[in-house]
Image 1 (cartoon, rainbow, N blue to C red):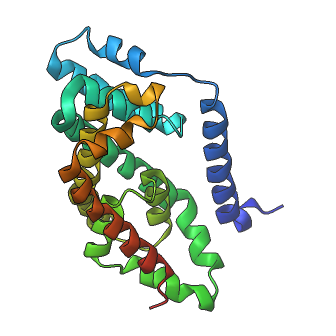
Image 2 (tube, one colour; image 1 turned 60 degrees about the horizontal axis):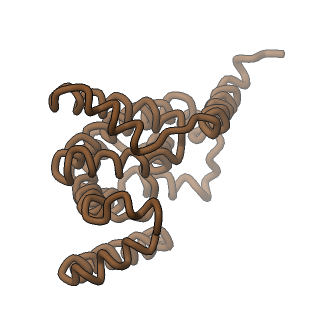
Amino acid sequence: MNLKKYKHEIQIIALVLALFVIWFGGRHLKIDVNTIENSLGRYPLYLSGLIYVILYVVVTFFIFFSKDVFWLAGALFFGPILSTVFICAAETINAFILFFLSRRFGRAYVETRLSEKYRHLDEKLGRIDFFWLFVFRAAPLIPYRFMDLAAGLTSMDFRKYLLACAVGSPVKMFWIQYVLYGVGKSILRDPKAIITFFLNNQRLMYFSLLYVVLIIMVIFKIRSKD
């Protein structure tokens, strides 16, 4: 069998299998807020911040649904502002890794297998305006992991995508970190605590309506055929 003939197919299969193994293996790794806080508390602020970023990048890469734990631990340990800075730094590194992982092992397959019917869609995604990339990163709707991988599969310029990450991610992350900092660990015992927090902070609730608008914009943009 001529493996070179099926090079692109092998690459995309390898990428999918690798992601599946990472997801499956991550299900058996357990982390919690207290463990992260106790680990960070042993070091001065500048070093704990660096450790937090490294742990965030490594652990969230292998455990798909661990970001919530890191978000809460970061908000409680560093406060909403610093935790936003550290998370956005880690997410930028994640974006770089996942974008080029997807671009390296998946883009060639997409290019060779796209029919004329979908080639226009690929070109459309590659030319998407910076404004919409910003909205996608700022709206709390599409997980960053899937966005990074999807962007790498298109012809999108990485510099434009990276700039959207740097500008849009802090908007979403500061809102999340501020809420988590206000609710605290009570959210672990009672998920409804977040509702109580919003009811007691009506200005924040009104401001959060902005995210409803952003989500609606994202939904309409995704469904748009233009």
